[in-house]
Length: 432
Image (tube, rainbow, N blue to C red; front, side, top):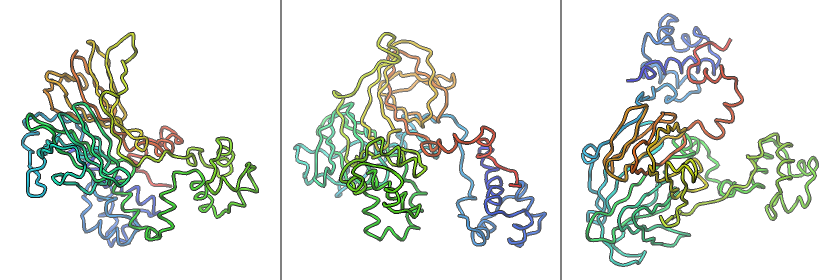
């Protein structure tokens, strides 16, 4: 187990005491502990028992999960060979028949994705989206990237209507949360399968807990407001509400042509309008920009992939194909990477990476450790771990999913001094 696991709860406890403004002796008294015993807990010489954690959560405004040790893995990568993946094989039945064969592939408990190799066992000979053999799921909260191998029929709801896309090897798709879907095979011979990588983005367990605390979710007006939040006028109105200001207050302070129609959403605000409003609200302009609303499945056939040569057309070291993605999850990107020339180019990517070998005898080096991969073997690589693809002919499917230190978090951290950034992970000093 990582050394970080052993000290996290004690470090976090010190941070919590700062947050709720308790000195050691105040906390010890409220927990009915001697100051000497409490200091042993605080300094990591004595473990924090579940009984003490329960007492803390009853006395102080904190969650039990705040003090449960995360399981941190010091390994920079995880490599799953085919024989290990095969041991996880299990058949899934639908309507009393074998429908899928599942196998686990490389991931890590702190990675934001759950990847599966899924063989399609149900044969359908027609192209009807309402084929009675097709067993639909209900959709799921996690986003899904899917890579297809063989002749696979992909069924999904589009604008509430059952739809079928005939997929072939190398095609890909993106499935948003809660979109019902299914997969079957068009071939009686050979193996048809998908690489299905489900992943979380902004909505996670913490979001679910926050939603549980919002009684207003039962209010239909609130739900309507949230569903339209991608439009600038609704985001502006939300900031006005939070500041206890009215639309008239904004009109009085900011000169905007055709204001009434714009604040009602009948006409879009111009960029100049939004700059003025963001200055008035004292927010970054990105907070009130309209957002492209993309709630449908994205299907992308291999013939339509964008192709690039890295680093350029003249020095063609890698051939890249960019796969299906969505503007709603801009930091999650799938690509095919083929090594064209022998090289010593090293990458250090800020995202979590899922890497799937598309051909035998592929090779990857991670921090100078060379790994030979067979077809269908997989690797998970932590963010910022140095790696390279040196061998000509190697070909990989790569999915990159941003780490949690992204977006608004990066912006807030960037405002801090370097020495204060270091304190975020391990702030052990008292606040005064």
